[in-house]
Amino acid sequence: MSELFTSLQQGLRDFKNNHNIDMSHPNGAIVYGKPYPAVKKLVWMSPNHPKNNSTHFYHEFQIPLENGHRVSVATSRSWASENTNQIRSVILIPTKQMFRQPDNKNLISYKYIPMFINNTKLGIPEHLKEHMKGIDAVHVHENSDMFHDYVKSISRLPRFGTAEQYIRNGTKSTFQNERAMTDDELNEHFKNTSLKQEEHPHNIHIYHDDYNDNKVRQHDYNIKTEQLTTDEKWD
Picture (cartoon, rainbow, N blue to C red):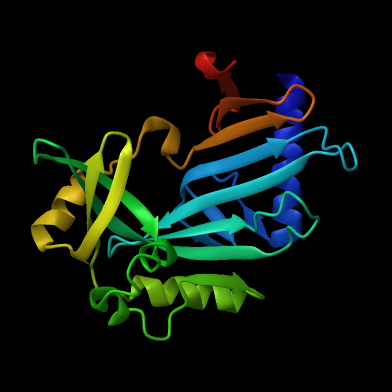
């Protein structure tokens, strides 16, 4: 466990030095010198990489905004290459997914889903298109001003979300349609997406993917207490 702790600390320091983003703040994250609320912090560690026997890192967290949207901030996923220098941000919008069962009852799930995933169904729906003029669903930042301006532009958006309808047949779900969420649905979404303990700002969830044994273990790191715990069912 001490080796994992040391590797995690080194990965967080490298992330801060290389990208000017400090995930180790217990109340959020410091991004390009500016504090932001940050939840659902995640570090994916892949030690013993066969290419150079080093540890590869993937970092991610979400910035919750007052209008109900979130911005996901992450290094680019590129396990097959060394190009992990870019920081990518994605707008996450409140999404209600309804899965109609054979008995015609709906199984409902509340999530935050990237805008570009919603856009792949039947083209960009009108209720999203009208809000997103001039705003990229996925944004790669070249400097601090670009990042701060992007978050600011998302924070100015009105409160909205998407309701998606699916038909479920056994384990298969077929997409049917999507529409704008009502105010009541947005309120229900807020109630049903409260943070779990491991998703709070003071916690970093860790996926430890060791190339030597092909196992993925999960851990939680409490920034306040500096305690590293292992989820027993993954050990």
